[in-house]
Image (tube, rainbow, N blue to C red):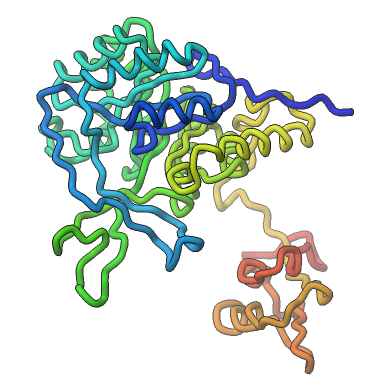
Length: 407
């Protein structure tokens, strides 16, 4: 019998009983909620982004919206939330209480400042409270810092290096993680600035600014707040491909631990993020939608997957997919064709229509509407397999003359 895999990981010198953390979010903005999450089995929590006592926090409600026609089809969630209404005086008390109750769990805190003094004050107070990790929100508007007030700090590599250096210089014992944004031309340049600052790791890579939709009756974008709206931060499954790309780019170029954040909904998503270089995975939208108990499915699913692969821990996954990511010019040129399993076909016509009007008109239909592939016409684009609703009904295989074809 195969030995069951473990889930414990080491991240930035910290020991976690699994790679699964709750990110700085509404899930971690209440002491009792944070306690419930740790009791449920999460390895740790990052308390929602806090500020110094003098900062005025004025949030607008409602702040949530979604992409999708209904609850079961939601592919993304948007929010116009910015920062916790609880200042550092409340957060440092929560850190103390949580560490007393859960000494073996990770209690982190997210911070945001508008000056060097504010950043350093937040660090000193949190360290004094016993926090395990400090995450710096460089992916939200930063007040008067930088050449473009109100822009994301992480969009300016020089400023990233400077401010991250302030924070790291003020931290005497705890690791400092810099949370970046994907909204840059070169994320590697930003990651290199983080490394140059001396910071210990990167959180990649937060929500994406988005307009969540327009109400066609009122003409007001969502969420509508008294007849007006603002750009939201898009999270959830819709942004997972972007998060994977950001993690992969950083992992291939910069030697820093990465905690993934943005788009993970289940253990499979988490495994993908580990495979492209993340060491831990943070969750927000999924527990907000389904509750803290999803941690059981995350742990059970990842453990079973690791065991099935003969791997001992999540660390054995980290970065294993990176070698397969190459430039377009380095991809092999194979002669691919689609193969349709008639026994699984439900005669929905989706592959036929897609190939007819968006592919290469290579799918034909028998009189009984069962589709088949004209291999001479098929170029192997794979569109049919993507639109097919039945798993395994359409697969791409290497056709005759598999040695490749010219471009």
